[in-house]
Length: 448
Image 1 (cartoon, rainbow, N blue to C red):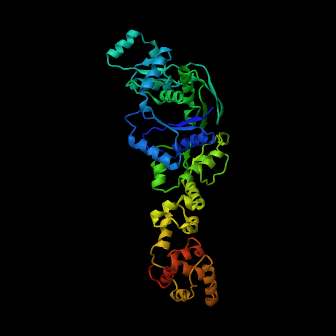
Image 2: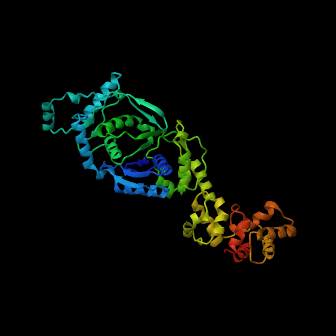
Image 3: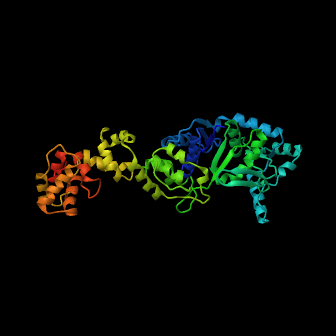
């Protein structure tokens, strides 16, 4: 059986790090098994869904490399949902309800006050045809609830093991609102049946939904329900549940403001909350090969932005030149400058740090002159071109012998004059990149 999975976000806000964990798990599982990964926009809520958010979802997914094999919008399938509702009506599995939101809120408050669970009392089932006609004559329009069977619903969860839920503690779910808009619980099942979804991978907050949706599936289809995997939800380092309201944790913010590498995000999320160590990976194929539901812990994982930033640096340190050469051009670095990338990448935290080293090598700086007399003698002792990575050692050995200096006393005045900063990549690699003309000018205090 070919694996078919889906990621179905609502275009009502920007994707955050928790959303992407769901997308990544589905993508890696499909990739590992050569299956289909679908992006399906849950956009039936026309009031909150926007095209701008839909495009942002597609952009974030593509940037992370989570490309989809199939695409769908629920807003294109309203006729299919109406058809499925009619089928449920014909088999007596849905019934019309006329309570207003205020009336339902009062019922729940009364039940809670009596120490009872706030489960819908099915009073709408007691309405006669005459009662319903009178309500509709007053302008009431029904919302449609699915009538649950009160039999245990059981499944073998790929993360949580055997799950058994008794629906008597669950309200009959509303499938279609009074304005005719179908809701997630219903649309998702219809889509999964039509898309031949084989596995549903999502957070553990959907466990109750699963019990309900299995019953809806069985009422609509003779095929068996999908295999489910419910993983623990991600929380922030402070223990706060992820939300679209936390804009700092949006994928757009991480890309455009924090300048995080996509594979740093993928590497962290693929291992966070699993039995495996978090380590930088440079390809999704590698993560897919390693992905296994049995490795996901039952404990709540915490997302730490500082941990992501540290991992981001490690990803950059491992990234080969071929993967970044076109990006380097934006900083004035020639596409042939592989030696530059190899020299500076170990000193990068984000890719934007390239700007500093590109300016030092290819631009102009104001040298920091800490010992003019020593630097003048250093300029006189410079070896003749062409320069290689051996030139720095030859030059400093000669200066060591002539000046008696060593260690920081020898090297720091040279670094400050040539780079303007007291730290960075090894000078043996930078010296030939800066070149003889700029080196001589900077040693005597000339901006170059």
